[in-house]
Length: 116
Length: 114
Image (cartoon, rainbow over all chains, first blue to last red; front, top):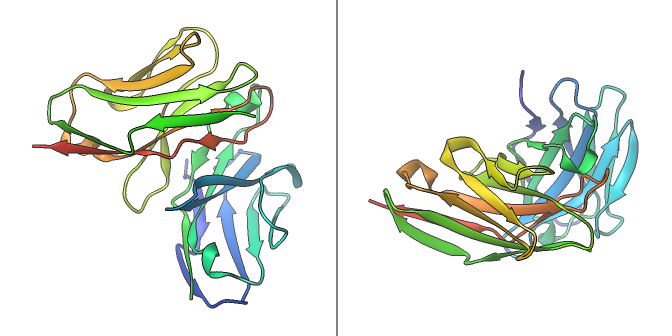
């Protein structure tokens, strides 16, 4: 099976712009989660989607949003970019059968966003 | 709320030596615990996880971890380090039940010396 794919892999934007990142989960996986990784704050949970519904949200401002499509693919959007949004954005998928929080989440390679 | 503390942001070992990376958790409910590894410019790869059952968990690449409830610890070990083990390691926890939100520790950068 193909792994989690994320596009684009690298992105450069300027302050005030908006950006959309895409994630395709492993085939058959129904849950998609997003994480932000920065040197200062480490790995932080953004949100989780399951069956096109946001199930859980981390402590991020409303500029960060996401959605999930019927084929489980997910996008996240960041509006009005700030310098502090520069980060590696990781997407993870899981099958969503059974133990929920005990399920393995499979991570993609990430999208590295640089805001100038 | 659950949290994870990784002691030692940088650990250096000689090739062939024991690897010990420390992780302590705080959780108000029985947690699920994970160790992930991240190589440069890559995503996270699961090494092992504890959900229920046997407290000694074996993972990939010769790593193992023991869940000790009394010590609220989940330390990662490998008997003999290999140069290819050099990477950053993250301990993570979910709060149990159906919630998949991972709370990560700050990470430990492992250096393996020849």
